[in-house]
Structure formats: structure tokens, C-alpha cells
Amino acid sequence: MSNGPGDGSAVQSVDRALTILKLLARNGELGVSEMAAVLGVHRSTAFRLVATLESHDLVEQDSDRGRYRLGVGLVRLAGATSARLDLVRESRAVTPALARTVGETVNVAVLSGREALYVDQVAGPSALQLHNWVGQRIPLHATSNGKVLLAHAPAALYDEVVAAGLPGLAARTVTDPGLLRAELAEVRRRGYATAVDELEDGLSAVAAPILGADGSVVASLSASGPTFRMPEKAIPAVAEQVMAAAGEVSARMGWFGAAV
Image 1 (cartoon, helix red, strand yellow):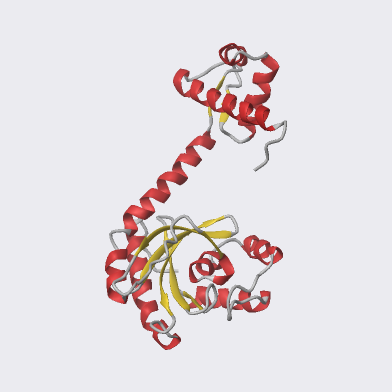
Image 2 (cartoon, helix red, strand yellow):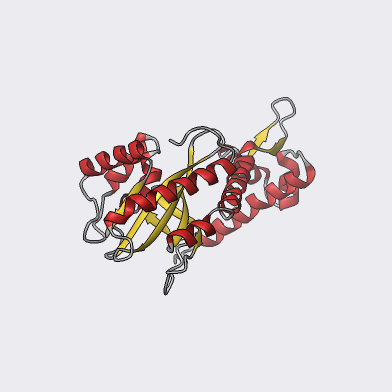
């Protein structure tokens, strides 16, 4: 970790910016001079801090009075956190039963930049020496959850993922952009994605999309286990169960239309 001469001033700036947010939360509105007085800094320093916060929509200025208040960016951040907590809560009403039925590990993942972020996991009765995926970020091109999320993401994300490279992680990882594009089209057509010996040798997984109230794909639900217990011939049957469970979670998230 860097410990250079600029680190102290950077930390101090972050601390002051967070203090401004707390001040606005407590007082509703404040002018730059008031913020500067509380922080004990020059007015120009306070203005630079609040201007940076404004550029990220974390604060906004009242055009008539020139005072600042908390911005919509904070609402978006809070909403994203709330939505993730809702997803875990609602999926937990469904995933334990799926894990028992298929006998394998069930994971829920969301899109995070160019990766899949695992937010919840339930172990099935067959799982041994369980690897905890929660909090881990996994490449989109090499996982069933990642393929589901990438298949339903804007086309620009596919271009970003390809541009960043498609590293081979196991024996059957898809590293050819054309093959990946074709597979994503198949994911959209049939409603689920698979990954057999792609993230790790000997690991198989199948995933289906979870929809939000507006019908957009907000997450992916997967079942995964050793390839010897989940060979390719068993994937279609597991996929039916995973899609049904994902549909239940989607309904709990407010979606009552047909699956994508």
C-alpha cells in the first residue's frame, strides 16, 4: 500500500468531505462559508470539496439561495444497498429448498463492473469442504452466473469484457469472443447458462436470471457442484429446477410477467 507524501492530505480531504455530508444531513442546508467555519478551513478549500461532492450528485445547490443540501446521488447509493439486501432476503425464501432438491451449492450473484459479485450462498446436503463464494468477484465469461448477467447487460459491457481479455482459467473456458457472443445469444434463447470445467476443472454450474419489478435482470441464481455429480447430461434437469427457483425469486422481487 502506498504511503507517500500525498496520502495524508488525501485522507484529510476525504474526512472533510464526509464531514460535509454529515453536516448537511444534520442541518438540511448550509452555505460554503458555514461549512468552512465548522471545518476550520479557508472558504476556497470548502468550495473545492463541495464542488467535488456536487460533481458526483452527492450534494446539490439551491439555485436561488446558493446553499447546499444532500443530493440524489446518496439516494441512489442507498437504493442500491437496499435492493441488494432485498435480493438476499427474498432469495433466502427460495434457495434453501433448491439446494436440498439438487443437493448442491446455490449462489446468488449480481453484476459489479466487469465481474459477477456473489452476494449469497446456501449449501446443499452433498456439499463437502464448501468454498465460500460470498463477497468474491468472478469473471463473467467463465461462470454460469456471469454469462447470465453478461447476456442481459448492455452490449457495451460485452465489448469491455472482450477488450479486457478472456483468460483461460480451466480446461474449457471460452476464450474466443465469437464463441462467447454465440453462447450468450443461446443463454437468452433458452433462459439459462452453463459452465462445465470453465472456472475450475471439475466444477459444473447452471444459472438463470432473477428479474426485478420492471422486468430487468437484477441478479443470477445458480446451482453448482463437482462435474462427476453434475455431468453435462444432468444439466437440463438441473436447469429446469434452477429456472423455476429463479422465477420464484423474481416474483418475490415484484416481477409477475413471463421469464426472459
